[in-house]
Image 1 (tube, rainbow, N blue to C red):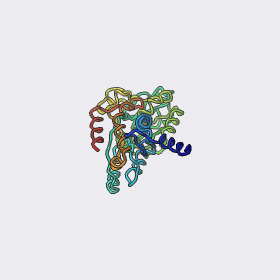
Image 2 (tube, one colour):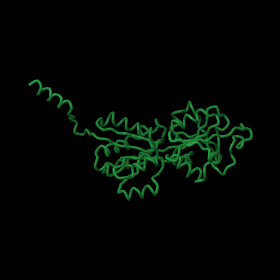
Image 3 (cartoon, rainbow, N blue to C red):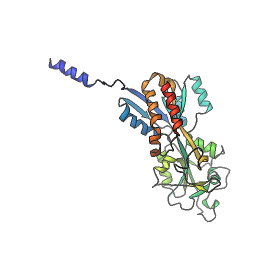
Image 4 (cartoon, helix red, strand yellow):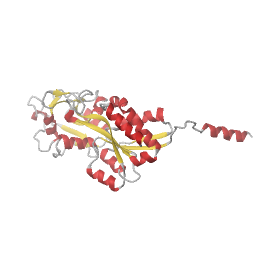
Length: 302
């Protein structure tokens, strides 16, 4: 009798009486830039919304993440710091992967230097581009301003796996070749460390990596023609003063996953309903409410 009673107690203790409780796994990969925001939303979701769902967020980079997303039985979401390209769309179509683009925030590409660099705190957008371009004659700080140190400029950035690199290459360099000695890194933490330890460094990444590490690096104010503009939550918008270096960031949803796995759809709705709440703390400018509401309405319609 005691043994049967014990079995009954254990069985009841494992039962979830919440009819809305979900279980399962949500797989997310992609952009290292978007990672801190998505990881924070996932943490909140697992803590307060659906404790039985495991939301796993990785950061292989936008391009590498798409390769895991646009295949049969791929990831449920791919975070991206650029829009999906034509080749990726073609592969998704051929693989019969139905996708939905979800814009989640706005980011400002931020160029940073070592805190002890007190001479290059303001640069024009063309000077920034020329520092990295192979066809430029800028190699030393004194090549920009004769009063600056005759020290070789050391350039850093994320590698080709990242959408941040692609945005930089396409929108800022206008697809010009990079100097051969640009130090490109897969890991953002490594990139941050390299810049913070090199007085002659200049590098770039998303605004969030700057705003959360201001004690280690300094942001360059960019002059687009009307005076230097500091990247900030106020200037980073699609029609703001920093607009030339502003870009939307995304997550892409596998619609088949959303239709067949309730936990994936539930997380996608939670994401869009709460992403603006966490955007600022992770270094992103939030989206207009009407854009968020339109996406939530679409997802609930699934």
